Image 1 (cartoon, one colour):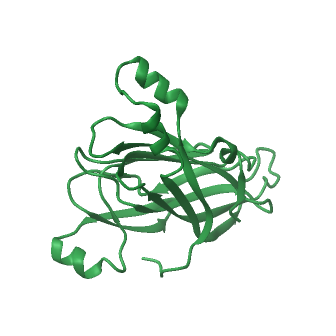
Image 2 (cartoon, one colour):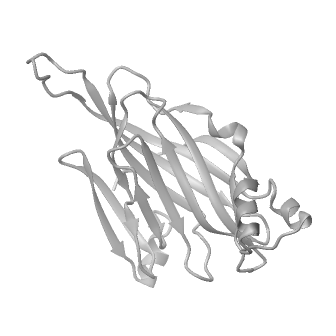
Length: 236
């Protein structure tokens, strides 16, 4: 496990009601909500994202078919911390974080951690960079006593986490709570990226979520403010 390192805040944003998704749910009869409820959901639930260590792993590229040197590439091990702030009376049930690397021409997601977490117990995730530009991800289910003893220094993930995006320019982490539960408030994530050497590594971020209020079964769709979604951040 790597030593603890300070995270640099990228943004702390209010979440808005996703009006388009909400209209779809209303048409299908899946949710009944009035203007007062909409007002309660607006601008009270927040998401924050912080950038941790960005380690440049190696440079170099394969030979081109004509024998000349191909364009050099760099590999980055990127740490992120995603934090959800529920409003009083609200609970996050699902969330999706998108890391969009398309502002960096030629950037590709090589691996992600955690890739998947399933089950009914807290899981400690140990991640190291292995051969072949992949993470070695070792999940360990912890007993109650161990969880209490190590909670100040370890990172835990409750179910469920599902990822996609390896081999493409966008990475997706889906976080889903169990029935009657709510999402853990913070998530430590890692991304292994290949990008052209000598160029800035740029990314955009988006987050969509669904929350419930007062223990109700109905889920209200939220998303980052539309004016912020296209903001570009330099990671390295």
